[in-house]
Image (cartoon, rainbow, N blue to C red; front, side, top):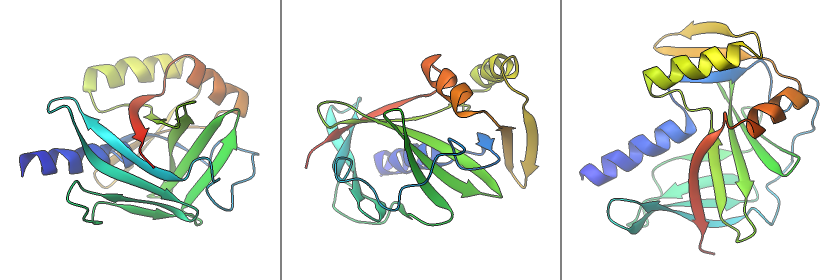
Length: 182
């Protein structure tokens, strides 16, 4: 039960956290959104639980979007359909998965490896000390506008595509590897 709860928390944070770097529009700006998920990215991906050494939840990427199944094959964790609130763009070998939340665009970055596995990344602001350090570094590069909505805090930036790629190359985006199993 505790493992299931921790996985739910993991996916909640991976998809959306209460403190997020956000954007005024889907990123990268000026790049057209995809109408469907490309065939190369479609498939079944699993996370690897470092404590047990076993595969855990399953991410299923289809032409219309994605959904998750737990290790018991129950499809109840989360789902996203390409729409005006879930926008996917492809630019310089990265998939930019944009979620609209509380009027803000939240970004997750997906990079596919030659093996077919994917890296699922974000600017991680969960840890308070790291958050202060990241925001300080980010503030030297871009203007940050703090926006509070209910229990959520957004740190809104508006980078050009070139500035966004520089943030990626400088290691602002970090995350988990998901192995492709089908």
